[in-house]
Length: 74
Image 1 (cartoon, rainbow, N blue to C red):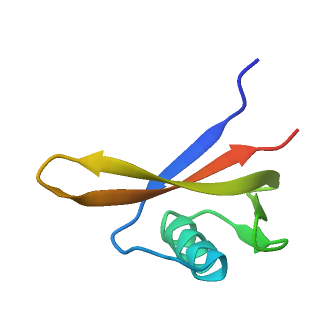
Image 2 (spheres, rainbow, N blue to C red; image 1 turned 90 degrees about the vertical axis):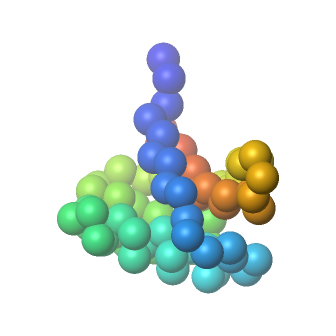
């Protein structure tokens, strides 16, 4: 079975995990989600626990785009 993922494309780049987490929480709350931060790598979204990772996606003729990837923890 696949784990549920939430992918958020960020407008700005974040180099500190705490700043990334704050940006993710703000983006999710703007979407109407309930969020609770556990620590710098985990949070609760609408009652489900997710782990936070990030990746950089190359874009042709432009700087890479940073994405926050939330993977549901079971």
